Length: 406
Image (tube, rainbow, N blue to C red; front, side, top):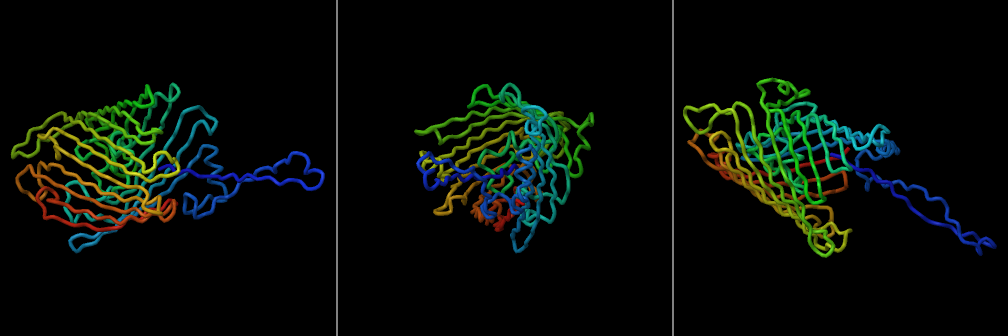
């Protein structure tokens, strides 16, 4: 969650009167103009210029508060979530080139609505038991002019193998990390190493290893160094394409595989066997098509995402997952609002209600994200679940997310 700060320079000149006017006018020195608070990126403003001064010296501080309030089956629930992040730029700090140190602390409080819905995965991507933890703590180093990047530390695999570039506006958890991929991801982020190689501008390859049994709370490294904790390997390739007269339209297609080394219990049978590994793969494609691609100042356009993932059905809670979404950015005169609709389907090996499996669960989500300013947004959200948990009664969920960049 890195939020930029803007400093606007206003130019101008005053011609001298009298005889001096016959000579070329010398413009006065340009003076920085403070951005109006309401047009800034943070509720707390620029701290009298201190925020910008820190960023110029390689220190970025971002705090975001989000709250979900949902109702379903006549019940209501509310939860709150705090992200507090510090990003250090090694070059701006005068240390070395290409390095970034990132630290993210999180607090989750309240309760989610899924206790009243019964989805096998969850309703909201913030839904988790209350906790306070160090969620991410890693160093990212660029090498060979940025063609190679290495990230080491506690991190969220979602940034590399999960959420598409423009998929973050949906609230349902399934639009993030694939539900059947056991990679270290929110809230159970984990220790890992990622190597990304970009030989050409349109192609990126990634290879990663993560701890196999991450936990929530505190520093979250309880199992990271256990010899029997297992590990997960992941690899992926993403290819970006562009089209249109100015090449502004485009998309990214990514394909990945994972292999988990850990004790895995067979699912869906009365006398389960134990396995020492699991494996799966995933593919997704996102397309961004602008309303006026020849006008770089016009952000309005359509984003379409298709995704699918598979895991070994005899040892995975969800053998198959498929999802799709479409979102339009820029609604009439409100060119920074977003509206979207998406749907997903996955198999459930062991239904939560106790019915014999496998069964399936499906969901549909529709939202409108009203960005009142760059730092405050309101997002009404509606979700419908078919057979939540694999064998539950259908459920309609309605709610609101409030997000504030402090």
